[in-house]
Each structure stands twice: as structure tokens, then as C-alpha cells.
Image (tube, rainbow, N blue to C red; front, top):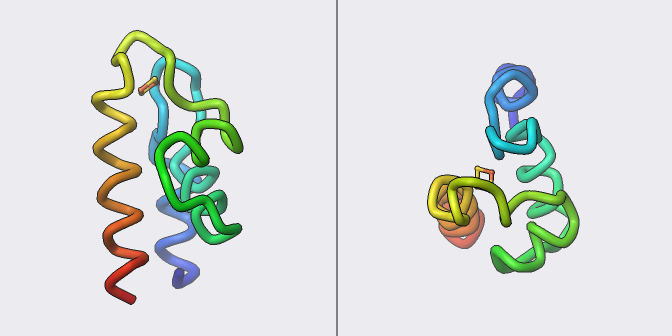
Length: 69
Ligand code: FES
């Protein structure tokens, strides 16, 4: 992740309902999380008002991007 991407990820929401920033999700994936459940366990996302639909889509996109690297 470039410096600019990292700065943006620190500002963007990852899980709005729990106030968890996107960079924590990105970091969890970089640390080896390979599924939504693993990311949720490492970051605390999920289980909020979105019922994992909003944050689940973000995680799915990031995991797919990681696979394509
Ligand atoms: S955005 Fe918070 S649980 Fe999905």
C-alpha cells in the first residue's frame, strides 16, 4: 500500500457502526486474515447494524484485490 493509500485508509470508515477505520481491515488482511470471519475476529468489525453487509462487501473486495496481487 502506498503512503497516499494508507493515509486515505486511516480516514475512511471500515465499520461505521463500530467506528473502526478501513486501515485496520487492510492491516488484518496484510497480517494474514483470509476470510471475513478472520478479519472480524482480528478487528472487531461485523455484528453491527449493517448485519455484515456493508463491511462484508469491503472485506470481500479487499480479499479479492489481495488474491490478484
Ligand atoms: S459496518 Fe459495522 S458491522 Fe458492518
